[in-house]
Image (tube, rainbow, N blue to C red; front, side):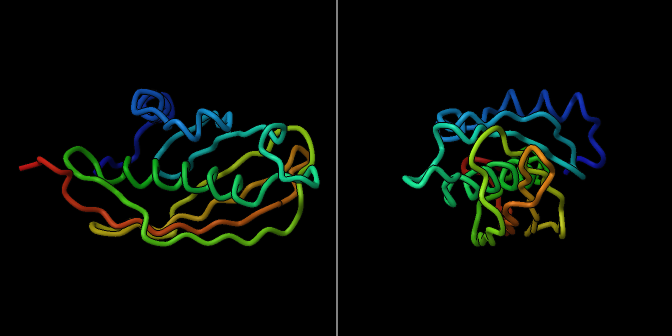
Length: 143
C-alpha cells in the first residue's frame, strides 16, 4: 500500500490504469491524484436529466470513479478494492459548465476504505456529497 505518493506519480498511475468506459463516455477527467486527495472534473452537458439538471446518477458515477480509484491506489499491487456501499445527498443542481469532485479518505484500513467525495459547481457551491466504502481483497490470480 503506497504511503504518500506524489501528485505527478499518482496522476500517471490513474491515467495508466484507465478510468473505464462509463467515465470516458461521461467526460470525466482526473486532474489530481494522491493518497490524500483526488480531484476530477465532469461536464454537465451530455450528463443531464430531461429537466436540464445534472443527473443525480452522474454525480454518483463521478464519486464512485474517484473513490474506487483512490481505494485501489491504497490497496496496492496484487490487491483489488471493490465497492460495497455508496450513498449520495444532492443539495444543489448544476445546469451548465463543469462540476469538480474532490475525494478524501475518511478511513484507510488493510481490508476496507471509506472515502468522501464533494462535488461542486464552477462557483464552488456544493452540489452533492457522496460516501463510498470499498472492501480490499487479493486480486484474482494473485499468489
